[in-house]
Image (cartoon, one colour):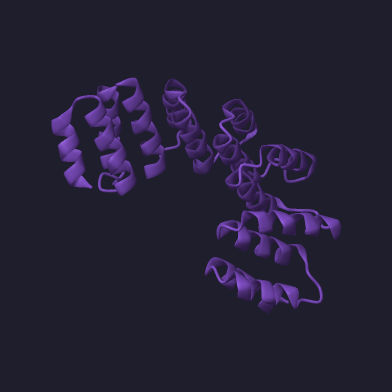
Length: 230
């Protein structure tokens, strides 16, 4: 059974869903780990509807999802824009013993961000204790993408005030986009300097964001310099 679990994981991560499903269907007994592996395989490889179908089949067998199952199925739900189903899954998470686990909670924030429901995302975010880098990054991305630029900057400052300095290109991308929309090139330049300090000045995602920010704010020389640093 352990060998079959490994096969499911390998096939799923390699995108060989036909082989993964063959292994899964040939199993005489299936535990939660196996169901979660096959659901994750479909969810990660663009076959979200099949991932959701398997989740409901698993529930019919009386198995209770864990945080990894919830993370995969919530991600699948958000990618196919199933709003009502996503809210049902949120209810399942709350009722389960995994309602406070980071993987499920972070998946919910990302889901509500994709649904453009920032208040729901904030509700989930506020209940996470302690928050990890994914939690902060996802919340900032939601604010930045949905037009809440000041809230994105406030969220960034709050994160720093809590002593979290392990930053990444996604966080800086969100901050640069917020500065661009607010035409705050001076603050953006400070963030650019911070990104260089963290070794992200040549990252394509952050580099494109800072280039766009300078260009939108009319700082064309700075935009050109940032562009050639990518």
